[in-house]
Length: 440
Image (tube, rainbow, N blue to C red):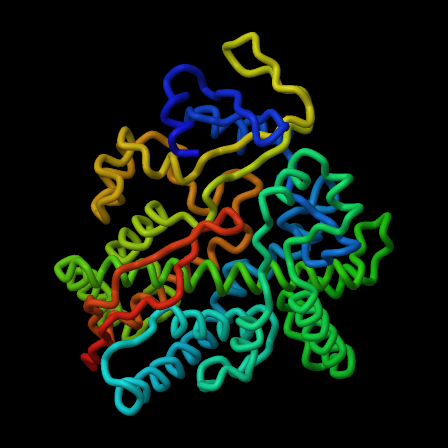
């Protein structure tokens, strides 16, 4: 996709390509990104993801919701991520980070010295946070060395990577793909989340005095409505619990690990980030909710990580009403898929010179203000911006700042990084070792 983007850029705000037998418009101009995501959003309302609720119930989430269904779920869940709610859950997150440090310190002292498989450790932490703040559960992720709790169960379930012929059918012949039962999630994974969600719901209903007004409670309220009023079925509740939980823990852990990987390679940048965190902690007495918004260099490091390793490689939209492209005679027909190549834009040398270099100065206030708008798309843009982006940023700031205050991260011979792009997201491969030295 990057090569196609580079070939088409400068010739037109978008170019036509084929994905298998399906014509697609590939956006190459930031102004067109603005049109699709913000200005003319009503023409590009849906994401066009493959769903097959009959065989793959986890596919029927907010991520793939369309029309009124998407709007209903989003409006119901927005309060979960409001400022007041984020302030209320901040102490819970701090407690989990403290527990993480205790477990990591024990690892450093008794179970193998300084080399740590960082990806798995950070994923345990972010899964604990996702379970605690979104679902009100303790998945026993931090002290579960034998992987018998939720972390181990998730790891043993299967996220399916479609074969080429399956992608062909999912893209070009969706009715056939649905009829023959193609899916993106294994039956084991679907069953795990069905059981977990039903257990949570059953407990909430049996103990109404313990309602938390969290994600589960907000979704439960929608089950009390009829389908015509925007009510959700049991399978839709499960699908949305899955997507919020998985996106929260997987995306956050990946970005934290990539960030620490880059900081391990540049000790001077790491030291500057650490000093920023220490200064903010000293100013506020501890890493309070307000202190997390007063760490400019930490933010620069995180934004540069999100630029270099965006969670989503592409954003896809579907033309929901015929769209006349401004300043041209071209009309994009209803039903056409539009791709915004996030990774390619984030690695465009016009906007980010020497794009493979990790440089937090790209996100200094001066550099950010001088760059073209709509060239940083880490959380999306417009009405379909990631609903949990504020929670995501709070987690990222807290975790990175806390770890930098307590540890120094260094490369070792096993540190070289591998990554994959399964499911159109960037994920870190297994086996990422880094030296972790305790400093307080």
